[in-house]
Length: 193
Image 1: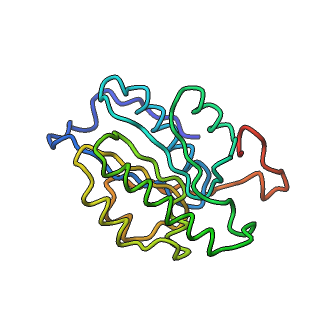
Image 2 (image 1 turned 45 degrees about the vertical axis):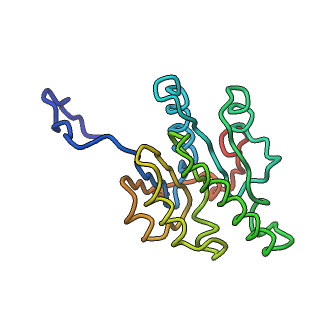
Image 3 (image 1 turned 60 degrees about the horizontal axis):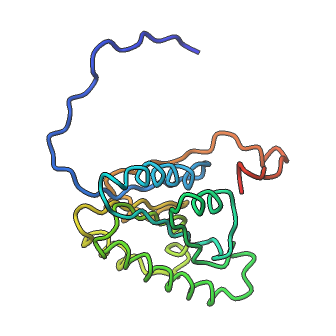
């Protein structure tokens, strides 16, 4: 480790641009994409009294009956989170049904993005229905372009389409450096539900 001297001067000037809704993407092969989006949702939800608009999470690969840690906590605090899918694709008994669920879920999420009642809409794991061809990319891009100007949208998932990253205001790529699973350690409840 190299020791650094803490900065004594501000390293940037405050931007002068307008405040507006952002498109934020969390992608890559590393852990933390959904976790980062949930943290953003919690931050926004905690300020609902300031902006007076809703925060809502749509999970494209989770089943509606999912009861992971985030579901239990969000239920307790009243932050809506919706499972729209039928789980991992390799567990699906009918991939066409999985595709249909993704399309139905997209219509619900699209309505939330466009309704003007939301401050932040999280589209967790939306990249999978896109890269599997279950959802067409252009309608998603069109919705993001035509959303009300103060609506923020956060999208997560591996292998994000380049067109979506080009449209986004902020893109973070989580990079896998080391993972316990590769060392034979199974997922830990409460850490990797």
